[in-house]
Image (cartoon, rainbow, N blue to C red; front, top):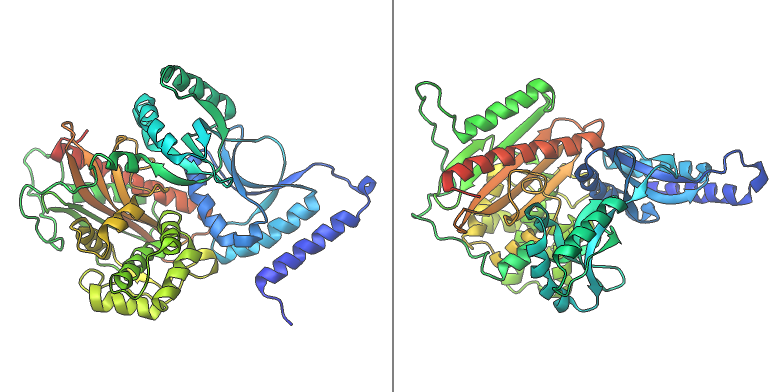
Amino acid sequence: MALNRRELCLATIVGALFSELSAPREAAADDAKYDISYFWAPNIDDVLDYKQQVEEALGPLSLGKLEVVAGKRNYGLIQHWDGMKLTADALAWAQSRMLEAADLDKAISIKHNGYEPIYNVSFGVGPNLEALKASFGKVYAALDESARSDLAIEQAESGKYALVYRSLRRRTEAGNLAKRYGDALRGKGVKASVIAYGDNDQVYGETDYLAQGGALAPTPPRASPKPETNRPKKAPARKGGGAPGLEARIERHVDGLRREGRIAQDETTAWVVYDHETGEKYASINEDVQMPVASLIKLQVMTAFFHETRRGHLAYDAQARRKLERMIRNSDNNATNWAIDRIGGPRRVQEIISESYGRVFPDTRIVEKIPAGGKAYGNVASAHDYSRFLYGLWRREMPRSEEMLRLMGLPNRDRIYVGVPNIPSGTLVFDKTGTTARFNGDAGIIYAQDKRGRRHAYTIVGMISKASRAKHYGSWGPARSNVIREISGIVYDHMKRKHGLR
């Protein structure tokens, strides 16, 4: 019987292990220990972005938990194999077959030295979630404003909870932060210490904390909003050369990136910016161009799933809640395929979208589940589809809109807030990202505060599609994520002037 690719990979590893165990130790020419390396970059956010893609591609073939580590100058993504070079090479070869099938970069073996784990700051660990929630506000007030969005209550594999500031620092740096924040919290019943980064699920964060005060209630518009389908008005030419409109600023920035080679000639970008308060669309660039939107298609899957629950055909029980949380927050492909199967398969999902939400998603075509490794190129949609969806969602016109917003508000490695230096802490974000070696995108709503504390919502959709797969996804994906962050920063500056945002 012929072995499939995964069985062949596992057989190769077993063979390598047998060779290592049967080889006389004194005959070994290299007694150093080796790990598996996947990606290195000077920016830890780039490593965290890539980690999720590698985990999805490898699945059970990872044979262990992937770790983010700090080297002398860069951060890296590795698996602690701690074995001989022979077996490390065999595992790297086997995993590379899976990674390449998902359009990701190869794995290599690397000597186990020269890097260390990264650490967070802990403000309490225990089984009582409510007690940690009670401490959350005290810690939130003590943190620097730029750090507040990284405060979270995580659930560890042991079942306990931990209130942590996700500092992602080397141990010495994290220790210094723990001392500083511990001093600030003295006398308030909260102590600070260093804790190893665990990549745990977050169960409570900034959005949950701010939502307790009604922060998620949409601000009534000053006037009746115009339909989302309107096009941005072209600003008249200004004498003396005034500041260009937002759409022109985005186009000019993208043109500059093309000249610098940061966006290739075979890449198409699409951008939509819509102000939910005024009803104005400030940018619509290539918004109706269909693209293979990767994990952004999970928003349509979520819509179809909640459509069926509203009709009583599916139950939104504890299992379904966990699956959809993983689908939206973690972009888990297995959870997505579970939801698609429950709905009735890709064809049934498309039927629901076409028949009940055709005006929202007219450019959407869903033809497949998420393939192994996440290399999904068959499902397509447009930036305008997502802009219309977010318009309807914010007006509470989509099925189970409040739950959709909760799911999209769960923390993730977004590209429209996280890593955008000019967007302040306390800004709420409801979004979904998508990435393959041919696509990078984010679609979401930014809910920002002005200087008086009033909130203003706007949609931003950014999508970059490549005609052929990137040769080095490990560098291409994070670089395009940063392009979206740059545009998001430009958009926020525009909205800041428009609404007097912080």
